[in-house]
Image 1 (cartoon, rainbow, N blue to C red):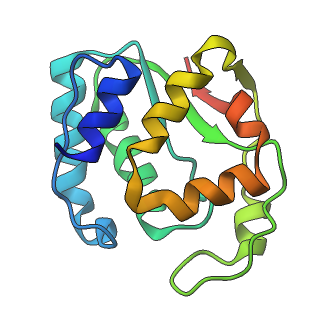
Image 2: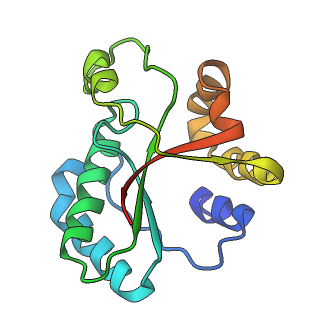
Length: 161
């Protein structure tokens, strides 16, 4: 079973779509990604959409492309769901990485948190879902070490709604 499906099942998600856009190459497939997301929006008619912020949270090129894809699809979508962009309440202080946005730019473009959601009893479910992303084990460990508050409270910037 793909880790994405296993994680969604751990979260109790009953319907999910996983598309095979190339890891590390989202920016080269934004038109396709936008079409896929727009079709999903029309099919599912969500009340809320959660997406990456413009800086991708950590400057990752795929995260930034995913933000552009989501917003382009939402711009073409007739309905107006509540749009939340994931953000952090902690300054970004990671070192520079090749291909990523400069750390100073990541921090300068960090969106303010306008909504905080305490995890409460959902923390165990969140950790189980995160545990399915074995390929991201180092990233999860970094979150635990550098941004432990994100485990207890999710922070978002409300873009619309």
